[in-house]
Length: 123
Image (spheres, rainbow, N blue to C red):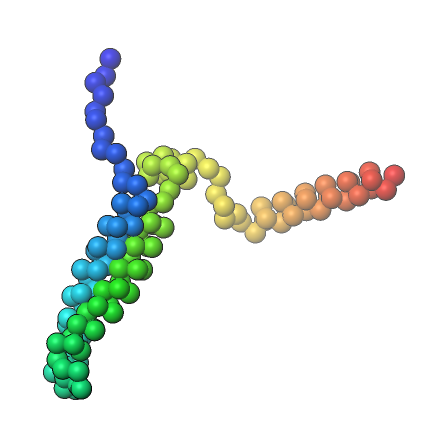
């Protein structure tokens, strides 16, 4: 009998959402700091001062990045099957893209079935 290897439990949707939001917040703060510093150095601090302008850049980009990365991480990782089973399912299912000839044969078969059904109903 083979020994069972303990596996880690997958994160929940809420954990994925939080992780995406935290990563997006970090990226957004960094990008906001870079662009905010450039804006303050290039155009001046403005009427509110350098710190307020820089913090506005940082917070707005952090909020935007965290929102989109949170949603993206949930959408990207929200699957019913584990990845190795999804790969097997894709490998063994028939292809969704068919040749033009196969598509034509399928359409003709559907037309014939519909025609037969209509003649059976009319008779």
